Amino acid sequence: MKKSILQQMAEGEGTSTAEVVPKSPRHRRMGSPVVGNVGKALTSLSGDTVLSLNPDKIDPSPFSDRFQTDAEATAALQELKVSIEREGQKLPVLVRPHPNEEGRYQLAYGHRRTAALQELHREADRPETVRVRAYVRDLTDAELIREQSLENGVRENLSWIEQALWAVQLKNAGIKQRDMEPILGQKETNISVLLKVANAIPDDIVHAIGRAKGVGRPAWVEFSKLFDDQKVADRIRKIVKDRSFLEGDGAERMKLASHAAKGRQKSDSMKSTQIEIRSAGKLLGKFKETTSSSMVTFPKAEARFARWLSEKLPELHADFLRQDGDQN
Image: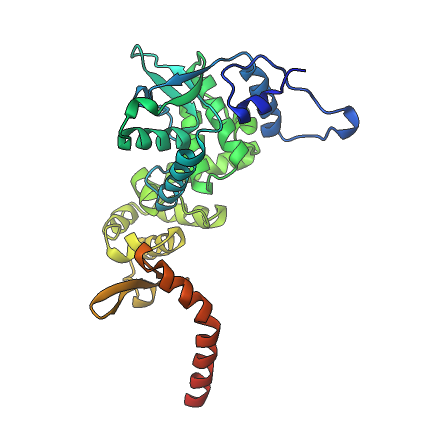
């Protein structure tokens, strides 16, 4: 019996010649447009060959759909590097031959896997041993965008503002709003809001705030309305290099940007505080306090102390409550 394409992708076989076997009708469920596109993509992959490519020959997609320098994305990339180094690349990426440079490729999807392998390639003692397993297919710009959107739909991890910027690129590529519905998994009315917000806020300010994973449509819509005043962008640009802004998460940066947009001074309560914890002249860790949380981090060298402290925390907390009660 032939293996399904999903099995072959998981096991990393060199070629794909099998077909996807559908479930029986009684087990079949109505799927979303994204799920339907996944089925079509998997079926088309069944005719593709997996090649082993030099990571340095693969360029990013010409259409950027996410914040590459976001701290959260950077941390996730490092985790993926460790995983690939230990277990290898489990799923191939999809590329097309570069339209302008012979011998090079452009990425359709699998950007995190490719970025991780490119870093491993640069760091390896024998770079020639680090390769990217990839499906190679001739794709137009519109087809590449659809494949790239498919990956986003499967993961469903784009933040709201990343979706908005992606919608703008889809529009600029000539895709009509009604045709964006199955790509974005959004109704046309919602796509209109995405486009309106993305066009209202300057790109540099959006990227300064970051992907802001916890910030949704209502906050971004209200924020976009502030840009009716032409001076708003200049006021925000004055604070984006401040330490309190750079150290904040997406929600905190949004608050600071909104505050600056309204012409107000930053309040001390909105600033983050970071304190080094030292003992006998040695750095044990760092304490960071923001408007939404408090955090203590320890260097790797203090891992044993951190574990010991985590075991003692309930006892220490009980002592704190007793002392706090005595003082009150």
